[in-house]
Image 1 (cartoon, rainbow, N blue to C red):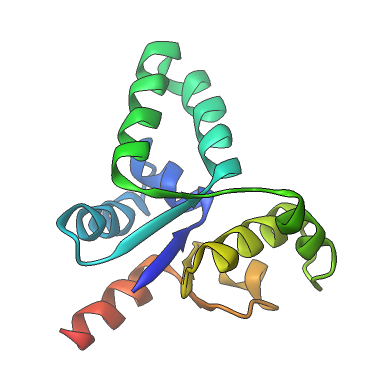
Image 2: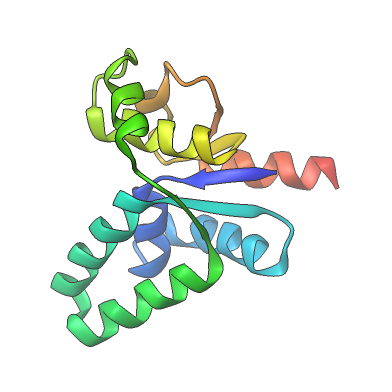
Length: 139
């Protein structure tokens, strides 16, 4: 399955944010093992660096972003992504842009801690625990 990771799931894993870190890290492990194709929106990468830098410092933030770039594919944010996001019925433009970036990059689903933010999604939407359960059921 090709899954776009929402920024909150990425930050949960990288910053060990409880009580969500374990599920986020389990999904990262699936990406690393090849059992899941993981995508990040380009804006997720920049936002993650910004927040990580405030929490763990510049050098560690750069290291964490480097690790993300090794592990995940990046769904670009282009003019067509932004124009498509404008046409969607999402409450939050950032979520709409993330959705469109993932959709145009070929993602089939979104992993997010806030599924209601993607209620208008044309992609399947999972919270991390539900996605893990779905992947285990498919094995």
